[in-house]
Image: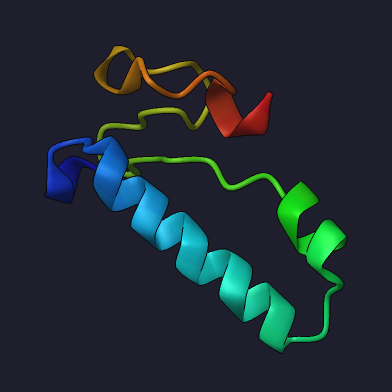
Length: 65
């Protein structure tokens, strides 16, 4: 997420792609929609262990919690 400026629009586009991939892999639509997709930035550790102030639009918090 740090590579795209922690942009929510970019995340939502990637989230949609992940859900499409889950559907192609055979998950039912409802099951694919239930899979948590959490925006993270590995280098700085954003949303890996603690909620990141860089992504205040993310209401799930760290690692989907």
